[in-house]
Length: 260
Image 1 (cartoon, one colour):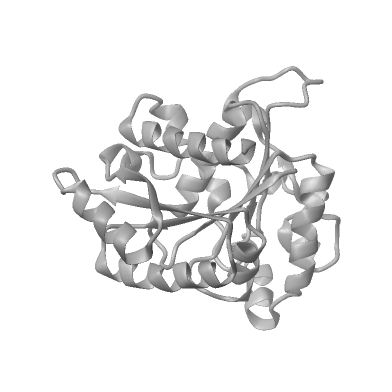
Image 2 (cartoon, helix red, strand yellow):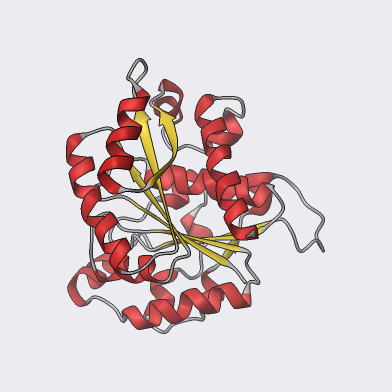
């Protein structure tokens, strides 16, 4: 039985896609089959972190949603470029990316016409089965819409990412309430971009008392992330960095839940 994880933020700019990509890589490195799907169809970007060239993508999630291909046809094996060479016939580890299209016409069509959310739901379950995934990470669109609610509703774990910012705190409260109403089995809060010198205990108290939810990890604001500029996986470039260590803690937390 696969574990489905949605990563979400109420606003953009929280580092959601970077966190999702690096988290998926760490889980795959632990010896699992992992899929990452970009459902932020209006502003796709996680492929950049993986350094996946969209020109090699014959199909995308958009093609599946318009009935042009099966969902697995839009999945690309990015194992070697992300975690290193593995034996060709080895089933694990494996890392797959299902990107959304960067084509302006495709994005405009989504904005103009929308799409069948039920078809996306079917596709997510088909993806797990046909790729024999252990974990599926869904990189959602920020804010609250029908697609986001679907992703949250089918998740075993919801990872909510926010910054230590009052707008983020207030907006995230809406998502927390929705997650509770949808009876999500596990809710983990990640506070990202925490400035050096800030009292972390105050942040933890504010989140846990305000949301009645666990703070899984606090991730530091750092210059290295800015320098990298989404030009690759941070955890590969800086394996000993406190940010990487924090993500490893989160990955271990998720793997523990998956084994229970």
